Length: 476
Image 1 (cartoon, rainbow, N blue to C red):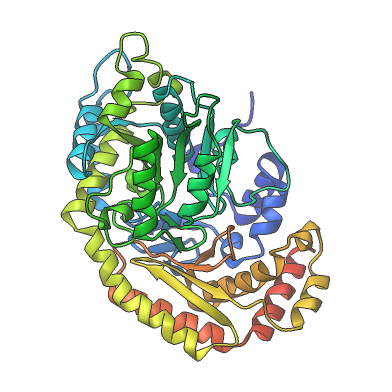
Image 2 (cartoon, helix red, strand yellow):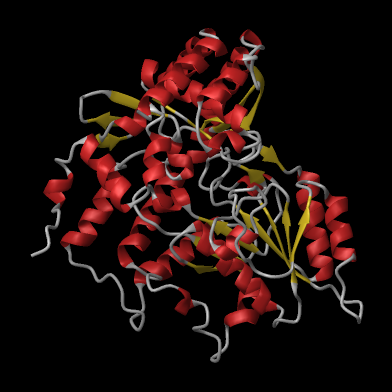
C-alpha cells in the first residue's frame, strides 16, 4: 500500500518536514529563496481578518492584502457562512447541461454594478485565464481578420503562454513562445499608441489591430494612467473598431477607492473588463471577463459558436465558486469597500509621506491611491558591494538584485521585529507594498506606519548586514 498523508497528518507536519517535502516534490530552490525570510521558516495555524496566527502562538499583521486577493481579509464570516450553507445543503457543483442559477445571478449582479452595456460575463478560474479569454473574444469579434494586439511596456497580465506574451515586465530568464502579433507601447503614452495603430494597417488601409490591453493602474509598478490617456484610448478604439480591454484583476472591488479604478471617470467604458483576485472573496479561485453586449454577441451569440468559449475550462460554472463570488461582491458593495479604501488612504498616504521625509537616505519616493501604496527604496550604500559578494548563486546576476536585496531586508525586519507581513513587487522598481485588506482598522494602519518608521530608523547598513547574515546561515 502507498504511504499517503491524510489531512490530519498535514496539520501535524513540522516546518522541517514541510521544507523536506517541498524539496522532494515541489521545488528545492523555492525553499532556499523563501527561508531567507522569517515567514518562510514558520507555519500558520489559522488566519482571520487582518491577522495570521502561527503555530507558536504569534500573531502577525498581514499588510499584503493577499497581493490583491484579500480585500475581505482572511476568512470573512459572511463568505464562510455562504460556503458552509452551500455544502450542508448538498447543492450541485457542476453539470454544464444544467443551467446554473448562481452563474445567472452573478452575471446579472455584475451588469447591475458596471457602467454602460458591460452586460455579458464569463467565469474562468484565474486572472490569466480571464485575460486570455478576453483577448480570444476580441480576436473572434473581428473574425480572425486582424492580426495584432497591443499592450504596454510595463504591463502584467499573467504568466501563461498567452498572457505571458502580453506581459511587459521581464518575469523570466527564459523566453517562452507566445501569441503572434504582439505590439508594445510606452505606458500612458497616447501618441505612441496612435503611431502603433497607424503603422498597423492592412493592404486595404484598414486597421490590423484587434485589441489594446491596459491596466488603468499598474499595481505591480505603481504607475497610473491619466484620465486624458484613458479617454483618448477609448476614442481611438471606437474610431478604429479596436476592442479596448481594461485589466483590473488586482485593482477591482474597491482597492483604489472606487469599485474599479476606471469608474472614477464618468462615462468611460471599456469593451471588456477583467477581474479576479478579491472577486473570489479570498476563498475561491474564480475570475471573470465582462464584455459590452455588442462585442460579445457578435463573437459568440450564434448557434455555431455559442459553446466555443464555455468549453475552455472544465470548472466554468462551479457552484461553490459562483456563490462565493456572489457573496464577496455583495459584501464589497454593502460594506462600501471603496469608502473603506479611501479611509485607509487618509491615514496611510500622509503617514508614508512623513516617513519618506524623515528617512530621505532610504526612501526615494512613495506613491499610491486608496489601500494600495508603494514605498521605493534607494539602491543604498557601498555596503551593497559586500552584500553582493556574500550572497551566492545566480541571484546576483539579476539587474534588480540590489534593489530587491534592500527591500527584502526591510520586509524581513518588519516581520521579525514587529510582526508585520509585507511584500515587494517583482516588477518595475520593486517597491515595498503597503496594500492592506479593506477590513483593516485605523489603529492597524497606524501600527504598520510606526513599525516601518522604526525599521527604517535602524539604517540600511544594519538591516542589510542582518539580512545577509541570516541568508548565508540558512544555506548551511
